[in-house]
Structure formats: structure tokens, C-alpha cells
Length: 68
Image (cartoon, rainbow, N blue to C red; front, side):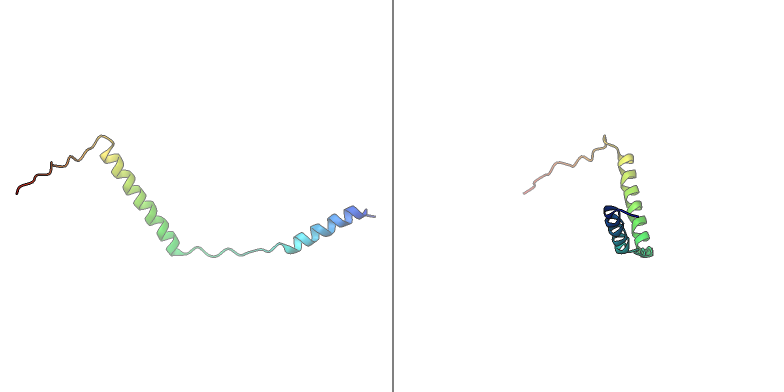
């Protein structure tokens, strides 16, 4: 025979289990995969540009000239 507290807990557990809802995940969109691949490719190109140019590379601009 269960005590009143045990029965109360068992009822609460049963009510909580009844509230659980299993949600089916949406299938992955091929456009999402394509977007992720494009983002990764763009990041790779940017990182490669940083590695090739490096921190010591400078692009000196010619001084501005004014000729009236």
C-alpha cells in the first residue's frame, strides 16, 4: 500500500509524462546545406587571403597631387 505522499508524487509524474510531446524534426533543407557550404567557402577564402598577405604587407598609396 502506497503512502499518500508517494501516491501524490506518482500522480504528478504521470501528469508530467502525459504533457510530454514528441516533436518530429523537420528534414534538412538542401538550400540550408548549400548556404552553409557557401559561408564556409567564403570564410576559407578570407582566411587564405589573410595568410597570403600576412600582417607585414602594406599597400602604399601615392601622395595626392593637386595641379590647378
